[in-house]
Image (cartoon, rainbow, N blue to C red):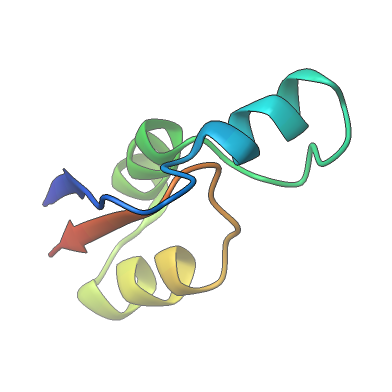
Length: 64
């Protein structure tokens, strides 16, 4: 599993500012999402489902 950055106009800065100022703490950092899924998932389908249903701070691509 790899994580690749995705370049966007906001590039994650808006998500980080929202998280720091406690505007939107429902977002998850990309690397922490990878750690969680590697610890908890038991199958490919679990990984895809978990990563598809979370809100991330910055845009990225996951290669599974």
